[in-house]
Amino acid sequence: MSLLDKFQPYADVRDELARATVAPVATPIDRVLSATRGEIAGREVLLAGTNNYLGLTFDPGVIAAARDALESQGTGTTGSRMANGSYADHRALEHELITAFGARAAIVFSTGYQANLGTISALAGSGDHLLIDADCHASIYDGCRLSAADTLRFRHNDAASLDRRLARLGAEAARTLVVVEGLYSMLGDRTPLADIVEVTRRHGAWLLVDEAHSFGVYGERGLGVAEHDGLLEQVDFVVGTFSKSLAGIGGFCVSRHEALDVARMASRPYVFTASPSPSAIAATRAALARVLDGAALRAQLWRNAERLYAGLDALGYRLGAPEPGPVAALIMRDRASATELWQQLLDAGIYTNLMLPPATPGGESLLRISVSAAHQDGDIDAILAAFPAHADARRSAAS
Ligand code: PMP
Image (tube, rainbow, N blue to C red; front, side, top):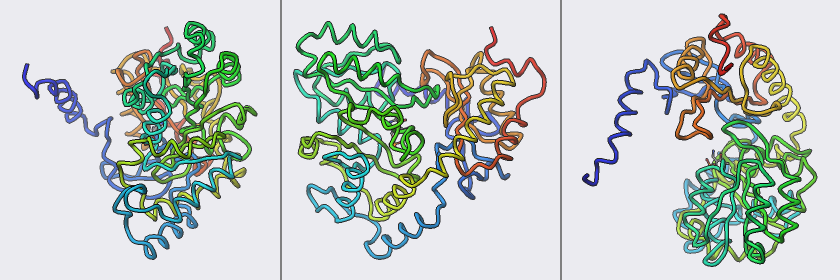
């Protein structure tokens, strides 16, 4: 086996995808026309696979803020905040996050991926423990790999499994960081946060909640599942991304512990990479204001989520979550039926996401639809109408 032989399976997948009329993975989107419309293979499609939950990518105020910063502060920062200087707007955004969460410290990262890498690897070091939900995102797993702490998993959304692991750690629980996600984007299910908090607190461990997909969507001010469940003060660290509801790029961690502020100095993914560009920060600050004041946007998003969930349920699909949410995941029988449905929907003018094993929990083949506050009632009806009419095709994994 030579150095490059390990890439053969990737080449096989690429060749398989190249045979499809339109690649169902890394699908070429030729043009983006709005928060809900794009052009794929020469025709206009309805975008229903974007994580653009509040539809803010084309918000005039957000665009104007980004344009002003671009013109007044230039295209990039050309370095890291530690080495090359910390801009006023980076610090202002951190303050706005601290205020929004009623927290004591915040760090802005260049991506959400780096927010997990940088937070987890800085907080948990040699002799510490990381205890993560088995279905956590790759960035959480990679944060654990970058950390010198030892990592254990507990069963997905299973507080009893977490309880057993923490009991086994005994006094070591005091140097253990538990990591969960507010909303798991593969199946669209929420963490049982009250149970996770109770177990974590009882053992004296620490809790980090990644609200990447729940920020902007849950809670009166859109702060996420912890706010929605009235548990913000019980959570030690909240991680989030700017790339979904906030419609830009970057990520953050906020904490009620002041020590997070100094942890940035020990965070390699913070120290050794360039800080976000001024336009990215300005866009995020404008979008954050829209999120905090976004009750009307959230109301429309939830109307859409409920309409879609009810429609898919009525069509007979097996759904990944027991309740509506911004992501609806259809659990399909196998790869072939998932791919076929994805293609049928695209042929009908609807772009969704195909998620195949090994990237999926439980090795399931998933068709994932995400809704946006920018979708109109008619868009949700169009998505539902695009599903094949005959009953055989409808039953996703009926057996
Ligand atoms: N955390 C979770 C739970 C995610 O789903 C993602 C990305 N989908 C990230 C972090 C990384 O965020 P970003 O893509 O903004 O880097």
